[in-house]
Image (tube, rainbow, N blue to C red):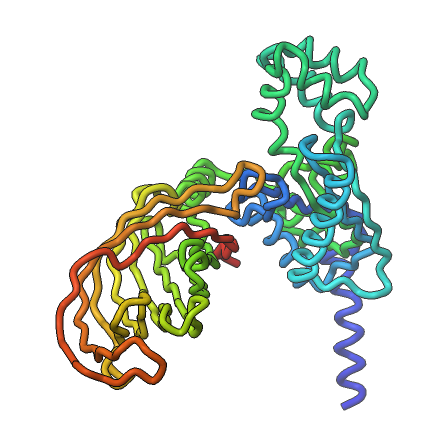
Length: 420
């Protein structure tokens, strides 16, 4: 048996060198992670999961992770920001993006502990990206003036000078054309890959060796995707972005209820474009400064809402159900309570309302105005409105009228559904 194995080894040693020559290639792989804004402020950030470039970057990470011929030598994580916001805010934002990129890359790529990892916050890349990009675009409006303002201004005053120039028009031009491209993060991965010259696949060579040793300095800061997406891929990504819906969960309270001494809290969840489900709960267990004045209640009023805008804001119509126990006295001769304390009012109705942000700076804080009407079946007892006043009547009736009036203050949590 030993002799047989020796013969096999000798034959392989003669065949393999003849069929393929082993070669060690050092490569630089650039993982590009674009970020986008999900609110009106840059602090509401997330990486753009529908970007074709990001999809290709994740494919490259999987390829590196699964390739047994690849050895990672070093990894540099980096991030950059656009000029909006203060210096301290941008520093925090850069750190946040850096951590986000690292979590994303490590999710798809196993980096050994022995591999050196560095972190670079590039902040606002005026000279590394913006200036070269403007110089290269001969069709850009006010191009020469933009170059002059950026080139001749200290870094600290570039934003303010752009904002003042031409009544803010220069700022608007670069904001529209380039600020989105500045919201970046990524990783530069240096690796060694063992290849066999006669057996190497052209597409594999393209991924790992095409141009990586001649990457320009500006491209290191803002790399293009390694794979140029096809027109079909671009169209699919654009369609996905158009159809994307940001799901949210809102917590709210009714100021009118609080003003009446009724503690309340509500939750509202987005179901889809145009549709949401709201569930407010009301509770009160005390008198209004006197035993003969009270509005004690425990009620819930779930409501399905239809919004006229796709992002579930603005005007809406709602249909709701309601159930509530109650104990009411208005300092008159009679106190009203649901029969035996076990016959809550129940029914339902419709409502109309309008919701909008409290301010542009805080878009997740919202104010909502709602009014509704409905019908409720009542079975209640009547007591003399005295301390330990006795029961003197019980009645059944149907109530028609206003059953909902609210000025809600809410905070919305973004629950963006992401695809792997």
